[in-house]
Image: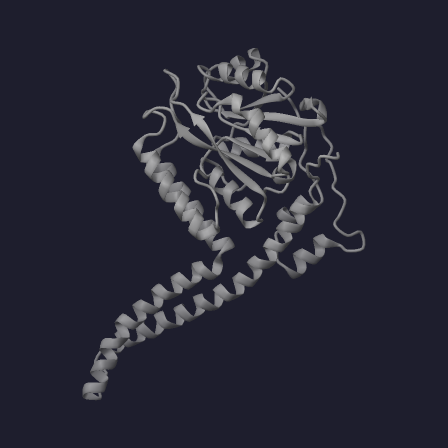
Length: 362
């Protein structure tokens, strides 16, 4: 078990003469939790926890839940592909021998008892300090030997994220439900947030330090990839997607992804991200729904009034006026929240730029 040291690493403030924390909290409404990211890093394992490779500290992070049958081989493959990198297995409350098998294969193990992939990734990002983070799964489905190529691409093009787009080698690798759901959600994220990926749900990614230290993970489960994609799209980070082999699970290994349950959670995450980061679009749509309902009730009453000069259905008239007022309030809320969202994106961008980032001259 590795325990983070009891000290925090402090990033210099953006401008010594400005109290950026109090200014943003007072004027822009960003939460204290988000502002703390610009001044304090989470407790982290020191550089001894991440091996050095050409002056760059690289770590491989493998969230695992009951993967005793595959994690040993997965760790061995990543250690062979990146001999100078440290490998961390995040044991997400496994009830089998996942932790013991991972240690025997040469990985360091961190334990996150709060179940969910998002919780495991949050634990890793807050506890491990490195320059380059390789995020994959412990089930052996991703091609570990593609990692050097992905890392080199991140370095050579000075990117913040490289996503390995999955290309199945067999029908078992991508069940039909997952395939169509992946296609639908990818198009939805491209339309709503400007995502540039064909496989935004890939769990195989290479990330820069600047990305990791600016990413306030909120999700707890498999919707973590959605949040990662939207975070990069909102801040317009330099990123690339590269096709990589994706294999079926080994016999005896079982997927933890539920097609319908996790699909609904991903959809709910997209709706919440839309509400938080695209409030004008979200509230315009909801306002339009209320307006259409108001018109549907009002038009018959108005038509009757124009024909007879009487209003025989006052409750319907009152209901239509109430819906119209709600529509107006929702549209007003959209304008206000859109201005706040733009200011928050500016602050997030400044925090991202202020994070200690990967440099070739470092």
